[in-house]
Image (cartoon, rainbow, N blue to C red; front, side, top):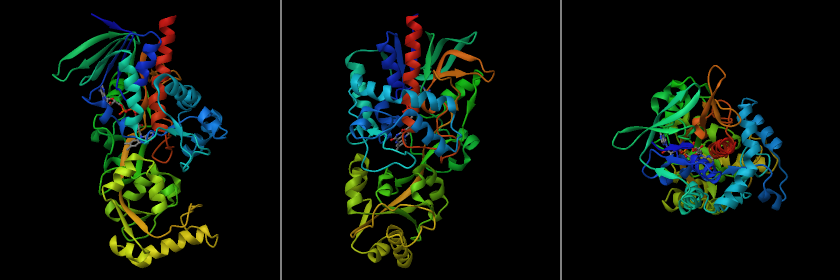
Length: 454
Ligand SMILES: Cc1cc2nc3c(=O)[nH]c(=O)nc-3n(C[C@H](O)[C@H](O)[C@H](O)COP(=O)(O)OP(=O)(O)OC[C@H]3O[C@@H](n4cnc5c(N)ncnc54)[C@H](O)[C@@H]3O)c2cc1C
């Protein structure tokens, strides 16, 4: 039977692992449970925000940054709870990774400077024109297929791994007809994401968000986590997740936090604000979920609307008719059925903070602008985007057992591995998801390449 140097399960972040390992001379098989991963994996649903510290795009824009600076931001946001091994490995590799993706795979990165993501002390998020994950995956997939870098099987699930004396010897995969096959390999990269689509696991590990609408990939069933645990792997941070408080109730699309970070604010169904929106969109999901009707309204103006159009998904949201416009605050209150006095009072509060006449009762330090008529309102609901905890790995992305021993040849990345967001939802910094998905896949591939060489 054919033997591979590497089987990669999961073609989101795992795709770059398959490419890099193949470039380094490995014989690779990539499998994915979905028939159409480019449109169904979590990576495809993203805004393509990818953080890297000290890149050439930052230098061109005069932004001074370093991996140490990035680590410091992660530690601040997670209150020093982030997994230190993962944090160091991923922040160290970030620049090499994004520059390789640009130079070798043709990803057209641009530095995002039009608004500042909460928690990043400098602008370090890259994305592509249109700011959609599919537009990141597209060029990568084209590069891989045009060069015939590896074999690929869709509709194929990883169901188990065969390990002998702490060394991977085979991957067990199941095709769409239910037939299970043992594929010989000495390395398996599990990049099958977390367990956001597995209600049972959510109820076990993440009750805070388990009752909230899930907006990620339906294939994220937590299979890597379960396979790892079955073979004695250590795991951690299972309570960690990325939430989001800005899914359009009308279109079920991502409105995006750019609306807030350009000066918008969120009111509840009574027309009142209920927290500091600038803390972060992830933690705001659970906060919004506590409000009456589990919903709210993002309040914006035309300038914010225009600025948000850089995000294709916002454009789609707006085109769906999700934004309700009015010439006055009073008219807007009527159109969205909230008490006029409450909404007027929130506009007055924001303006008073901007003019230095008052401090915000929730501690929001900056309202980036005074909203100008006409005013817009977008009804939003909270969502779970993906889980962040998973299998404990070394700095080379190799899975560690409860005993501390390494399972040689078993690698985990992205939602399958521990992330760098600490516990709960408030440690999530924009881009932590893709960095751990692509970063650990790339690191694993390089390690496998080195082993093949030696
Ligand atoms: C709307 C939205 C916007 C987001 N925006 C951002 C952003 O801008 N930046 C950011 O960093 N993060 C963002 N995230 C988070 C991000 O999506 C995830 O952190 C990241 O995509 C996870 O990558 P992954 O490779 O682990 O998983 P995925 O991209 O989901 O890839 C996993 C693949 O594995 C396959 N699979 C699953 N189980 C199996 C199995 N048993 N066998 C074989 N294949 C399997 C799936 O079909 C899938 O194709 C966003 C999330 C959402 C929902």
